[in-house]
Image (cartoon, rainbow, N blue to C red; front, side):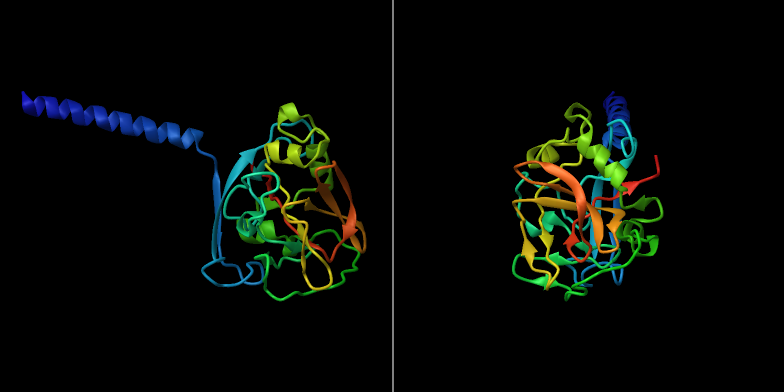
Length: 239
């Protein structure tokens, strides 16, 4: 009798465990990962050489609205806790336009050394320099300005920004925050915890790339100096 009861209990636990695994695999977000990639990762120290990212599926109408996006900035270790989170690890890495090298700024130290104080070239962001593709694989890339602009303008009810401000960027599906940027002269940190600016892959002019910017006052897309280093949010064409 005891043996029969033990067998029934064991079978029940096995069924419950199997169901939990199946449900967990359905409910859990897709995770993408990478290790150290020379020329992209800030350095080959244990601080940077492995990252895993949760993903989110967009649900707003228009370009980019049926795609998979990283749920955090490329290089970040976790989601921001607020729209003005100034933690360097949640800010992720910063990239100059059409350059694959990522930069990390602790608030007092820049890794690696600054590369370019000026960029003037008639080019969009090339695949060979796309850090999303280089780190995450061929299905991943930087978003187009059309996709970024659609995210900004689509309604809040669909998970987009609704043309809003920094708070709306954070409350969106992408949970963008004020990670700031690195300025052109020597890579000095600016506006972290105050403003956010992310790159699109399109250029505005030979010296300016397309950017989505947001602060407590509002948001817009505009052309800005390619030599600034800014966070990127990767998008996947694999549906």
